Length: 127
Image 1 (cartoon, one colour):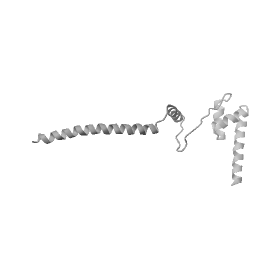
Image 2 (cartoon, one colour; image 1 turned 90 degrees about the vertical axis):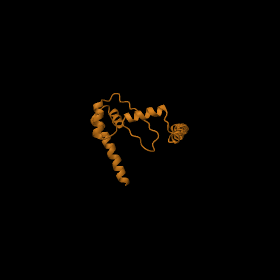
Image 3 (cartoon, rainbow, N blue to C red; image 1 turned 120 degrees about the vertical axis):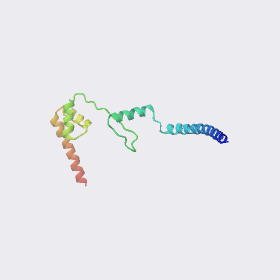
Image 4 (cartoon, one colour; image 1 turned 30 degrees about the horizontal axis):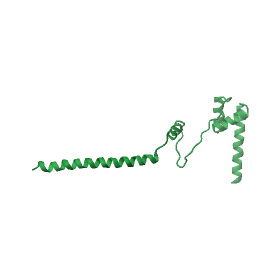
């Protein structure tokens, strides 16, 4: 008698397995729909990977970023780093300043610092 109740339990387990399979199909369909909405294209994945390599972090609300490579020909890397640190400017601004001063480091730093001072005095004058 004790064996008879076990058999229906086994049958119930088999039924549950069938139900589980059906549930799995439903979950797979849901997963495909969910993945389809949030799935990134190959180019999006590549660009995200490139941004992470550059040390850039994702910012909420920003969906598009343009990265332009500056033409640094004719500019020494050591000079560029020195101008960036002394003037406290971005790489692109330092390159522009060095090119406009024909590679003269002192003139480039002076040009950038005077531009920064002029912007600061204008912003203080408005306030």
